[in-house]
Length: 285
Image 1: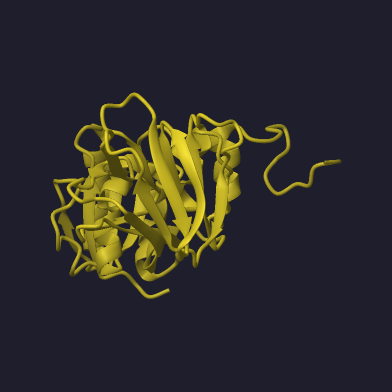
Image 2: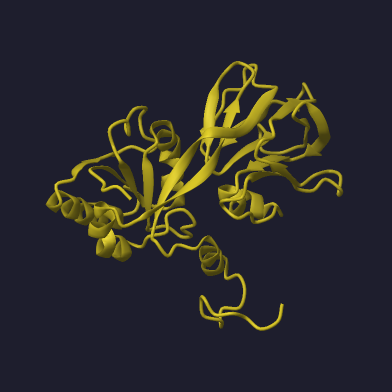
């Protein structure tokens, strides 16, 4: 891969150790002649990543998600250093990042493209989502009634607490908690999972990545909210019908060369037999 010549560091000030890690990595970058800067806000102001090859986020998955839209807009790679709890997206520890940062800057890394949603309201408001788009009743309780169409054809009408639309990357987040499937990050699909549906038969649906989804609010007495990656709230004036599809742009996550998404799932979710070392075949099953 090409060497990295400019980096914006985004440490999460709420995590005390993040500033120290950022300072160490910035010093390594400076020794190699790499241009660096530090972003003190997340979400980042628009245009913050326009002139950077890499954004190094030091915090956790939530911090990384908060800068994802800006990285997508400017095609800037993201490297996540985890000082949070899970670390599905921010997969480097502080020690791993420090030990291998010189090699990364020289081009010894891999980029993993991740599909993202493009979401548009009826009023023309546009947003990108790396993990998920969640539609819920505005007050946080009560059922809403939403009709979903794929490529102009009716899928179903959902009477539920809400709907989760998840990319493969976001399948291990809210989607998984609501009973949806884990999806391989490079699969060309996305998932819709109802939240506590009134009808037991309403289950998750997996759509082809080329599908164009529209969502209509079928209950004028309810005003649903639309949240993007658990943070951004779209304005609801003339918000429906909502249009959702896989965007033409992608997010590029910088990972170690031996990165395995299912190893992360095994470790973080304690999935499978912990007694079997990574890379060794299991017996049976």
